[in-house]
Image: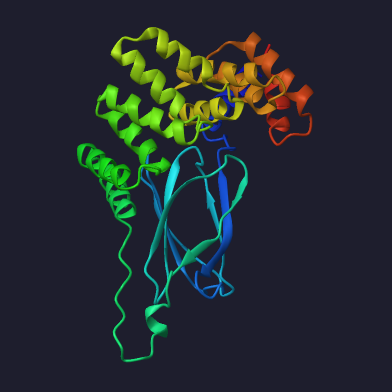
Length: 310
């Protein structure tokens, strides 16, 4: 019996690192001709991650102009490049909502598409927006790890269009990477002036002020950071998938502190304790999970584990 139990627990330990789900996001909508407002069929949408990891994938639109995109990791931003024959490509960086479906319609061609122009008269192309061009160049440089070049392009973008929130946010992030802390603080504050609810800037300001030695300001911004149960849980899951239980444990506890009824956080914390040999703590958390979600997708695993956790 002891051998059976040991084998069972080892199997759970191997499985737990891949059991996590919940950080996904979905994007749906239509691709529309900006002039005629008619749907554009069979478009290509290229999706690339702009931070944290490398991700490149093409998605195809439907004949009726609709599209559906599912992304496993919605904790980061992605650049969406929409292309269709006869239209100039359109690019936009978007942060999806974790665990939710975001609806977004893309419009192509502020003027008639090239394939539709039948007269022999030449038509002067519309000048590209310099802020957008600079921002996209900065995003490309950032993805390539050329952070100094990216910073220069983002600065160019916000100079051309000072109200460009995404430009200030991107500049704050890259300046933090470059350890240009005063510049990161300035850019993050500019972004918050334009969008006061943009809480993504709070940790940047906290880190930048901490690095400059202003502990009071750093503490001030840390206090403003929302205690987000889902965000802490997703961060813990990423660490679990890297076999880093030590750093995942406090994040799972933070998730529970933010939402005492977050059942999956108790389950993952219980399984973490199984892997680290803390059986009493494992029992408590797995039992709490079953009380909160007795018919959950992990209920069978929790019940079977509890048979061997004493």
